[in-house]
Length: 276
Image (tube, rainbow, N blue to C red; front, side, top):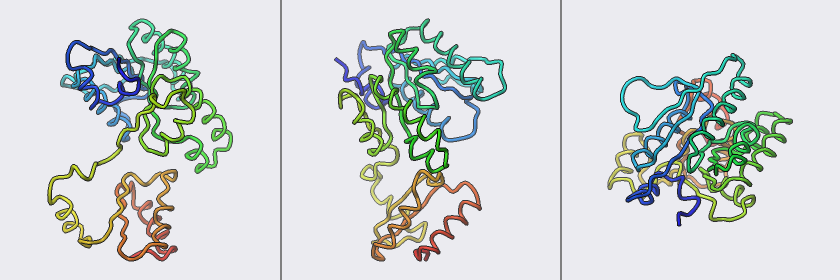
């Protein structure tokens, strides 16, 4: 038997598919592959790794397929007739559901998106296709940080339905895993995927060269936060915590998107008295 959550980890897929097992997965992604942002690289990376592990994967998307080279997996482009984002996503999900019903994959894999349960996941479930649900943010906190009061109530309610009906839930942080774990019927359905670098696996001497390159104290306790620029990532809490720590601790923030973001962070540090 294959643990339900394990189908979602490319590293674990290598073990599961070594031999006669060929798993058929449909990854539904309601966006274009030429869109700007890390989410596209995330999706393509997962698909490539899954294909390398022997998974028969079909990526269903809105287009923008990279030119040249075999990706190692199939891509089904869904064309829509509307220019409005909401209408385009609704039409896409309807057509993607038809493809999923026709192909009958072993699993449908979906990264969370607004209204996903009613637009896609419930339809797949009713068609007898089990789905794995990836969660990379908590709607309630994210939308509350944007002062979207109506959405901060509606989206989490729909998100709960998506989690409760999933056969596997992939979480990118322990906090998200704890939240999802309270909603699923079995804790075996939860998989937490390391979303970053495992420091013990760094080559010997790597941390020394990094500290030297950036002029960081050799014996300081460093806290590194990557991709911090979104307000719901909570970098303000991390910076504020420095006030209560001694001088051995330093914070390194990686991933500023613009000079405005950098200036805003530096101003916040100065207000808290933690800027060196």
